[in-house]
Image 1 (cartoon, rainbow, N blue to C red):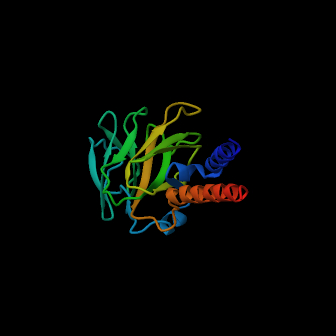
Image 2: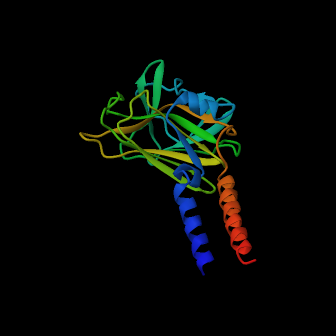
Image 3: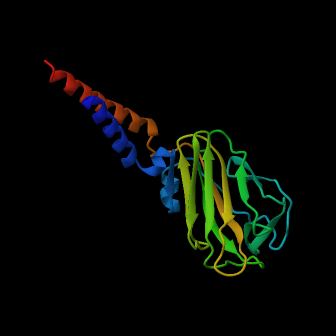
Length: 218
């Protein structure tokens, strides 16, 4: 009975000390250089082929380097924010959720510059965004607090990423629209720890405890 109690305690502590992103099979990056160093073959979709003020209907079939993907919103209409030569992809309805999906099975990293814009497509301060990434094993969500046009956010997954969504939290004043620039899509990670390694570590340590207990019986 005492041994079972010790094992349960050990496994509980092991789960508690695991990084949350490792348990969720995602690692978060807030620096573009680190994100690129942790992945391979990254491609960027700058959205500069869109026209400011235009409202193209979705879903949009896009490419980030060699990676194809789809972009969609609830009401099917996007909005070209930003300016000529530096256009950003935004929703045409403030409550819409931008969804990036249709990634190739080899995609392990998705990131970009996520922020809010006003009705004219200009950056809007004090706007929080809610970003969620999904893979076959689950999801990871994070609130981006007052991000700017230069705030990078990316996730790297141990499995293929199926989608990434971006939506606006209630801004401090007025309305704001979810906006994305330079969506970056990448392949197999180079430094992401496999969650299975943590499981093996815990199992191995638990085995040591069992062996130690057996030796005391001799």
